[in-house]
Image 1 (cartoon, rainbow, N blue to C red):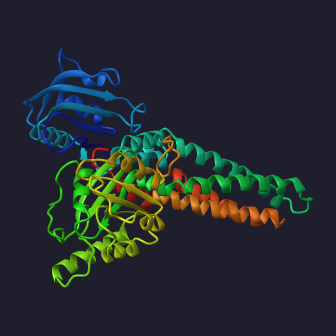
Image 2: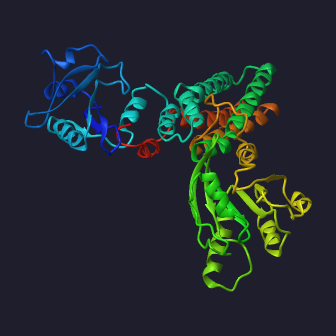
Length: 455
């Protein structure tokens, strides 16, 4: 890269420490102009990664902070270029003035993800590892961070490159046969190809199938709380959230709009939506709330269907049962602190997962916490980087698996070598999109546009 870029790498709010990153060919010269090490000398002459205390200068040369700074000499840096990192006090004014001094001395504002993009272009990481950087920055749980960190270390990229290399070697063998059409084809060639293509197909489909759980791990899961009025939906939301998020009264129809709250239950981030109680009503405002409840239930990947265990099943409860049919649902029998009057057997006929709780006392909430990850398929998982969290990667894996499958059929039927080669090369290209070995520039640009500035 011919330009030198700079950006604030910490948040916009004031804090004890603020960090500014610089990368590019002019980094060392610029750093020497705006930072003076205590005791003299040039920062650029200090060893890589050695934090040095000194004076930080504004555009006019005046000292604006006393702080730490270090340089990282190419190619042994994050981007593969000369880099500097300024660790100053986290005042927005100091950070802004430091950035202005960098720009005045020749640096340019870094774009979203430009540091990581330069690392990718320099071969410091493949594209799957670069995408894992974004997942790590935005991780909502420790497990999501663990999975992303393993992917940064190459858990996905190394496996993909291994499969891709097997396919490349296979294509080379078949192309050798195509180059000498007069020679008799060894039958073992097709048997060997079938074995490789079968194993590759199975491995790629297995990886692609982890995406649904990976999406939940990265994005969380939308969860609608559905039930008749006064079943305790808002009380359940408050109990799960740990504070009074929704208004709770004994008046039916208190909740008329969708109320959202995000919580974490173990490895799962739940985007909870408390909805209007389902019932037959003539109130036009309440009808709008019920319509919104239905839409939210349709859009949710999990439903908590709340029933009042102190009362018998009503027509409104039957409406709840009908609306949750075919959806991933947990039947929550609320008000377990009161004498039971509910026909639990009827509820169990309609729901695979049934649990009794008291939103008032907290009884049964721990069991609900334990049940939710199991219902959404997130229990007992290993977060070793083998979970695909990226839709682009999952789609490429499916395409590669399909082309491997087609090549397997061609080899099994003993079709001409070029038929096997064509589909195998298609699989190779799809896998190259994941690692970045064969991906269009516009796709790369789109990927890094999602990153925050400074990373």
